[in-house]
Image 1 (cartoon, rainbow, N blue to C red):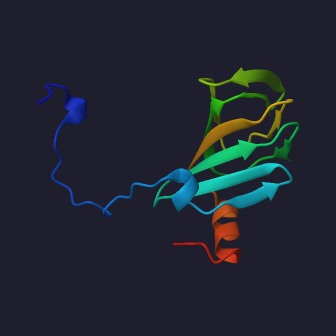
Image 2: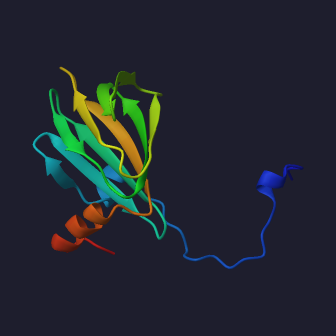
Length: 135
């Protein structure tokens, strides 16, 4: 048993049973753009999107109302966040507040990234619904 308050037991009721998945086997694949595919895992208050970039692929400049955390898992990407342009590698992350314009591109090798949105990104939920993949 931990003495840390971080790991204390709570008295609340679970909102859901929880879910363990194999990302490539259990999550639907959504084509976001040419060379850009996502496998979303949707919760009540957040959405995780596991994104694969083919070489030399661009996620066009955009902004959205949801807050986003961007984490590079494999490879190398260039992210433009507002006016800040950075080359990021596995282990690097960015916090993207609501309505901040951003774009991402891969280089000559594939890359893999995790996005976490809170609340769940409405555009992704709409794509899932259109493809009849919503839960």
